[in-house]
Length: 217
Image (tube, rainbow, N blue to C red; front, side, top):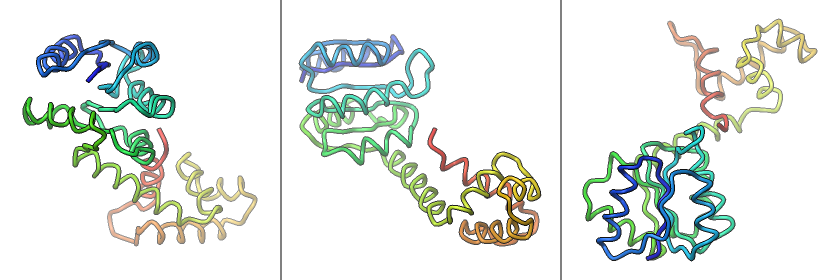
């Protein structure tokens, strides 16, 4: 296969180059950032792109965002995300839009060289290879979002204002409703989020955490 590698770690990038070349693959480009990755895919005839999630300049999600763009613009390019992190939002998008030829493997969980090469071949041949931890985190995120989708528009507004640190009185003033109405909305959203009264547990904090965990980042 004709492969492009996008990895900011010089040592890992060099190791992947040697490993894949020894297995009979052709490395058409080896780059350190998302810009170089997109340029390489546009300039070369690429069969497979191996992509890290976090790359320069911000080391947040540049790599996987580039992978999403490649999938949209170059659907014939197989993608293998190789990272230490699970970026749930874009991973979910990739998997949802994927007809195959996609892998997401955690670096720390690659058992051995032969297993990695098997994944490379499988993804390059149009298959799918997803680390169980990746699947688990995506499912957790999906469950969190589905719970929030049960909230009414007004309850969602109240929860958002709670996340901003506003008191019940401040929320009532902002929404032009009574304090009693706010309390009813909060009781309802607590119930929908599965947060019954429990001694020693701050339900308000727990509700805000559910909201923050489900936010797109």
